[in-house]
View (cartoon, one colour):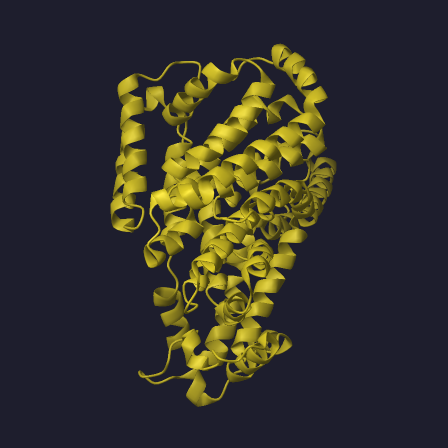
Length: 501
């Protein structure tokens, strides 16, 4: 029966089993996806013809892209699904009150307190889980069409999980009490007790730190401190989204001052021989100008609210998690582990080893530590792992689009494509295009970092920001709200990066 159900589900999605020779490939079978040069269509200038020929040569290309598109559509309905799960749980609890009385939480069996339907919907509504969930139909389709050997090769050898693992580790360390307290102490000297100065410092200085401690670490620090110094003061919903849009856009470009901290830059730096000096000359001043202008514009729009936030801050009690100062030597150990993680970012065995040392050190010094909550880092890691699995099968259509555009079309095209795929994947695919001029290289990287704030999936650190700040938005962060809030600062960035070099 289960086999019939599985075949029925695959049939509904158009994933009927392939012929026997495809289902069980020989040891010499070409792994999927095939190398882009194997299509032999480099000289064809027509994008439509190239895409059609590639789809006909490898029909699974279309299936993988459809599944990826469905996952993206799913993210736009996540907040509605969560709200429905809450309604079902509330109705379930109302029924329990009728049966067991007002103190049903003590009398009802533990397993009955949670509605199964509500729990299932809650899982489907977690944005960080969505791409991981859609890996299952992708895996079934790949096994059905290409066979288990090809599927195993792709998931084990065709996808790199280094970035998701790195983000989990760097998020956990950067969100630790000594690191947050040190950052708050330094920025507090600038901001004092003014919400306006905190807002400006975290959205100006914070993103630039991403060029040195990596973008995921900068996002974690900025999100934690924004939650404490801004979002907990309950600004208007428009102001919350505007700040979130600025944060995502500024983090995306703020990491481009060096050649090792931003994922989209890291993908091309070695291939194109870009040094940190190159990044400063080509992108540094543009990124700084865009951050300042975008921040100034939103500051002027919402400046009246800062007085209200200052009054609310005086009425609220101080956060107590950082009340006891952390001894300098403990902060020094955390900083050393943070630097170590950044330094060995390409070697999972080394930074995971450092993470184990970090966890042991937390236990040994727990009197000076806050409880480490690994939920957010693990969810973000799952999100990114699912994204790289899906993104690794999208090169068949992204590469021909990138390779057939001029400078300005490529700049804007890369920005748009980034909204639907991780910007590191966009720049990686650009390295596969032969004979890219210096102008086109700068254009594709500029577009990738400018568009990195438009959606949660556009830049690797964004899921970290969403996870940490989601609780400050009624019903969760809406993709449409984020897009609209990030659109203006994205256009500002595009203006500066489009200026002649």
